Length: 132
Image (tube, rainbow, N blue to C red):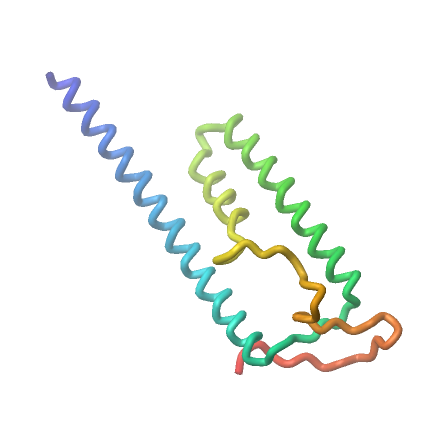
């Protein structure tokens, strides 16, 4: 009887710890989402933003960053299975790697939402700050 109660208490404590961990992750995601929302709202108010790099460079960097993110996810998932005692740390890192914003961002658009400077006409243009 006592062993059953101890098992139930242990499972409840584990569930509480898991719930607390999920709560902190969700709070972190909400805060990051709010920051992203503020930055996007500022960019929308300005209607566009300038990038000092060419469009091909921006697209290449974006593609490379996505590939690195996917590789990091695979490494962290492998480490998570090989070192279960560090599960909490690895899940926190995986949670950060899975943050992409409120909607899935498909990448830099081709319709000019990002005004990029052409390579031929690359002149030094001052950028507007994100904060108003």
